[in-house]
Image 1 (cartoon, one colour):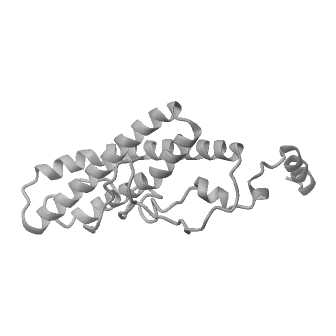
Image 2 (cartoon, rainbow, N blue to C red):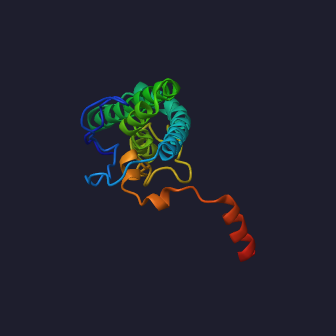
Image 3 (cartoon, rainbow, N blue to C red):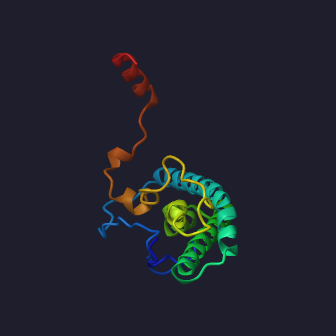
Length: 200
């Protein structure tokens, strides 16, 4: 379990983004077009839904790992095992902090204007929360090697672990660099006619 740099800036706060729980893919290019209000509203809905789903997943994951962590804290460990335990406690606490702040943000979004909501969601992407859950999925494998710690943590469920937290959602900046034609809603009537023509 790596004891590397962690993201410590609160969700929705200001300041530079950093840490291994956040994967940035911003190109640094200047936006080439103005994003329409309809596109921005769709983006707010998409990112709000993604944050809600990340909070749901985090609640489930932290609930499953909390009993094992409590038992781990109660164990008589020293040396390397104690150091690894302190790292695990920090990682769990960090994920719990992001979960709490994410819930507060989700509750406040309805009170924000469209611009304020998009800015807050760009500053606190759900990927940060999912990335903070990533180390927890290795607790079972990692602590099973220490005497008296085997079986404290559940095995990760299918799909948990590798690659989680690296998904990148669109931002207002991304939309501004997209071909306007690609961001237009598809005519549902045309889509239905196309499906009938193709036979499915």
